[in-house]
Image 1 (cartoon, helix red, strand yellow):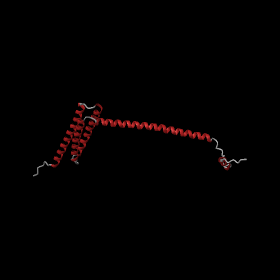
Image 2 (image 1 turned 45 degrees about the vertical axis):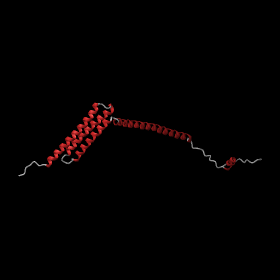
Image 3 (image 1 turned 60 degrees about the vertical axis):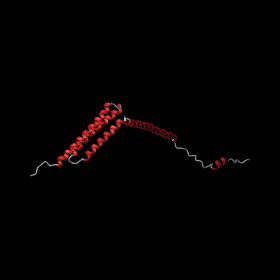
Image 4 (image 1 turned 60 degrees about the horizontal axis):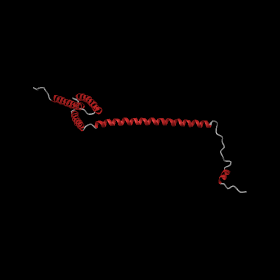
Length: 178
């Protein structure tokens, strides 16, 4: 008889008594299925959370880009409006710098009050700019912008005049000596 020379059969013969024939514990199959169900639940949770996160990111980008577009709308206003804005803004900044140079303990209250009123005028200007963005350029809005700037500049010039008068009163003496 021919001897079987199949290598696969030789492997099985070599490991004949070495096979693991241990029985699985009771209810092993049910525990395995329960674990698989738990994995599926967590996968579904992550899936729904990732969808929610994607929606939040998309909404955030939409809001951000919408704000950028409204800022660009103001920047895209006419060249004359931009020049007017930059000239008057420079004048207001110059007046504020002069006021801050004169700051001293004697006139601190005057400057603080002036800055509070300037904040109110700045808030009014921001409203005017928002109107410009929403309604576009028209004569009334441009006039309101220029009027706001003129009011701020005149106000700052009055504050500077008050500061000069306060300094003069404190440096000169009105008493005559005998």
